[in-house]
Amino acid sequence: MTFKPDTLALTALLGLLTALGPISTDMYLPSLPSLTDALDSTPAEAQLTLSVFLLGFASTQIFYGPLSDRYGRRPVLLAGLTIFVLATLLCAMADSMPMLIAARFAQALGASGPIVLARAIARDLYSGRRAGQELALMASIMGIVPIAAPTLGGVFEDAFGWRSVFIVGAGLGVILAGVVALRLPETAPRGAEPATPFGMIRIFGRFIRDVRFLVYVSLVCFSYAAIFVFISVSSFILQDLYGLTPVQFGLSFGICSVGYVGGTLTGRRITGRHGIDAAIGVGVILMALGGTAMTALALSDFAGVAALLAGTFVAFAGTGCVLPQAMAGALMPFPSSAGAASSLMGVCQMTFSALAGVLVAAALDWTVFADQAMPLASAEMALGVAAVLVFLGSKKIRLAARAGE
Image 1 (spheres, rainbow, N blue to C red):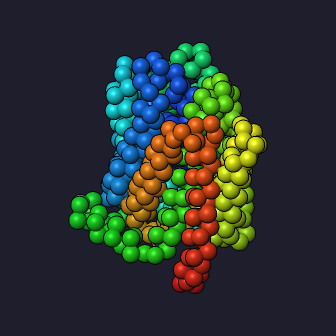
Image 2 (cartoon, rainbow, N blue to C red; image 1 turned 90 degrees about the vertical axis):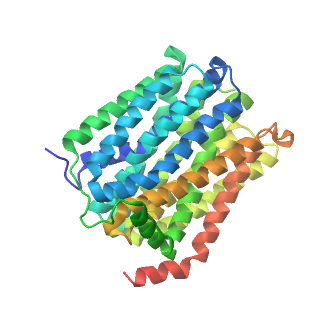
């Protein structure tokens, strides 16, 4: 028996599929310092395991959506999960940092499919405000992962070593593949563009010419980058700079993720009453306030773990309001090609975030920033302010799109 729309079981499955990428990153964050030592490497090289993962995540999302529009969500999704499981086992067997970096890239090739296709399936089944609410609920489920994953990863790290974290991830991939094969219905609409290079270029060109799509994708990029820059450098700042243990780091990361989950639930409620733009408006303000508070505290005598986490909590609450609703806004105009739209959105989101993460990680090496979290704080502030400016500057575009619906 397959899962039916508007059921918690289907929403939970889609939420876990979108969470596979974050699980692949968040669960091994507490292990970064120890695996760096175990593989006789440097923090900069270890950070590449994050950036390379995001590069792989972005580079293959462009294919999953059009292929699933053409051949169906289920077979393409199962192929991605198979790649993910095999590559995650390779990560567990890595005996050098170059091998781990290569395996992480392969892992990303598999993990990128589930997140693209879960969003596309949600768009297949729902529209309008209902789609925004469903994506927000999926994001709430996904948001629980950063609360539990780093803590769980820290426990496995302390008990069994860093390789055990990847073994657990592979096991989760096997379980999800089994559920998809047995319970997930096919939802792809008929009549998609052919999955050929020319067909993909033509349909992507249609997306790029849609100004509303560009506005919402920009908001997706800024809000996700605010999360990723924290993910990419927080383990080194909190553990190396402030002296937290892996378990303490996991708990701190979880506290920030509570803000994200709270933001998704708040955004879902606002969307149900006032629409997706109202939720995004609240979210961009929180992002800017959180980042500005982090920067001000980093420049003052109050810099420390509590100050950093407080500002991040507020910023993450903002991203929780913005991210699911901006995704829904980007996908709404394309009901027959939601997979391809989700792919292009994902490529933009991941590429932009990877570049932001690399820049912030590089800034950690600057002598002037050696004793504080200023690179992270200033990046969060810049992304929040940019999101506010895009939201305010696109008011006429968004209103015109609503009038035409």
